[in-house]
Image (cartoon, helix red, strand yellow):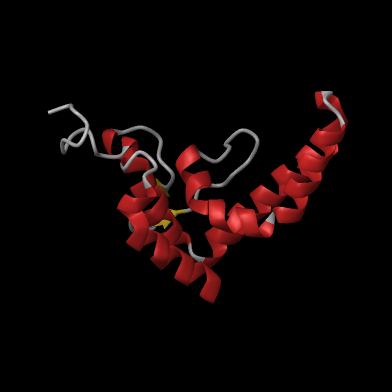
Amino acid sequence: DFWPGSRRASRSPSARGRRGVWRFTAEAGAMAPRSYSVDAPPKSHELYAAAKVIGDRCFDENLGFFKCKDQSAHPSKCIEEGKAVQACVHATLVEIEKKAPAEFRTYAECLESHTLKTEDCRTKQLIFEAAYFSS
C-alpha cells in the first residue's frame, strides 16, 4: 500500500506528522497562516499555488532581473535585482495570506498531496483565484 496512487502514498506530508503549511493555534484549534521569512521560506507547493499571482504582481521585478542576467554573466552583478524579486514574492505571499488564507491553504495542500499536478486540483485553484481576485 505504499505505491503511488495508493491511499497511504497520496496523503500529504503534514498528515504524516511533518511540519506543514499551517499550524494550530490555542484558540479552539483554529488554523493560523504560516509566516514567511529567510529562516522559514515558502515550500514548493506554496510557491506553485501562488505562481499565477506572483507572475502577475512581480512581472516588472522578474523582467529587471532577467535583463540584468542577460547583460552580465557574473552572479554578483544582479544581487539588487534578485533582492527586489524576493521582496516582491514575499509581499505577494503576505497579501495572499490576508485576502484568501483558507482557499490558498486548501489549494496548496492539494498540490502537495498530488505531487504538484494542477489538473488534480483545478477546482481548488479556481476557488482560490476567485476568492483572491474578488477581494
